[in-house]
Amino acid sequence: TFRFTIPYVVEDEDENSNFNNNPIDNIHHSNENERNDNTTNKIKAAKKPKIEEEKLSGCVLVVDDNLVNLKLCQRFLSKMGCLSETAINGDVAITKWQNNLTSFDVILMDKEMPVMGGLEAVQRIRVIEKGLDNRPSPIPIVALTAAAMTGDREECLAAGCNDYIPKPLNRFSLYSVLSKYLLKKGKL
Image 1: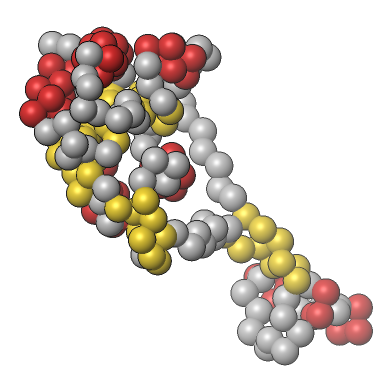
Image 2: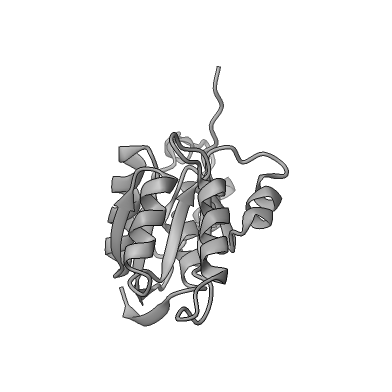
């Protein structure tokens, strides 16, 4: 079994509108004076909030073993104005990051991957950073995880992540978190 929710809002009908989508109101009424069209409510599907987003500037290393998640994340990042590179596990991510220390502004790191998981990779990156003299501040690392269980956020933060986004990933949550770490450069 599964459940889903359909958001809706109840709006007052426009006084000047002659068009009525409510099938109940199209039923013949014996006394038209009893029916007041100006106070008839209609139910509409709720629209997603329109967010005035600014483009972001930066390069993001996306680390995930799922190719669909990688492509989706790259698409979101591209629409936000960001450049991105990908890695399929923590080991590849560490190598890419070490070879381009100043190229990446943020790392999006999946928590669980084969070869080397995200939390182990984060811990290794933090150890490597401590030994670097030429990197002014630690790179922001945002954990991505499908296991949005109680304690996951705390576990990711304790491992050295700066932030956390539960999956399934959506553009609004990604933008909200990345806007803390990347420069804004104008409207989307």
